[in-house]
Image (cartoon, rainbow, N blue to C red; front, side, top):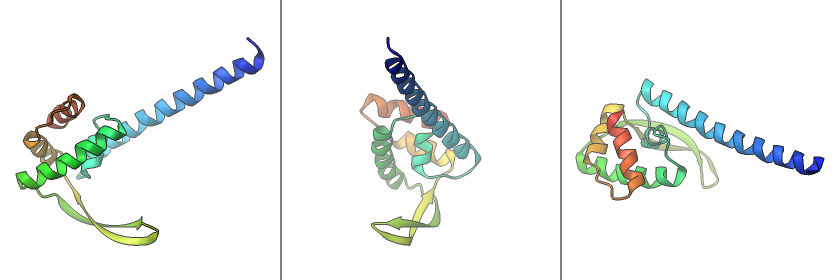
Amino acid sequence: MSSVAARRVLRDRVRTNRAASTERRAAAQAARRVRTGARSLVTHVIATGADAATVKGVVKALRTAAKNAGVKGRRARIRRSFDGARNVVKTVYRYTRAQVAQIAAAYKPRKADYKAVRAALIAA
């Protein structure tokens, strides 16, 4: 193997390892945030270690389950950039671990990935 090819292999390996460690760090940070206080449903689901597509689908279903179960999170106002407009005030909801477990208990998923996330949310 030439030195150029060897460098290319090492570079690709470094990139792969860096991406994997970034994902692990993000999941660990989310888990720590969830343990310390009320957070968004997205943060709770990320803390289970689910991938991005699964997070999106589960959170959408959990919001519906929360509405049906009558669980209301704590309201918070945040400022976000939204569709090109800066500092748009948004109302968001934050949920404790107990509230998320209650919502997850009311949630009945069909997909295997979603069932795994539901189990993790109930166990947390």
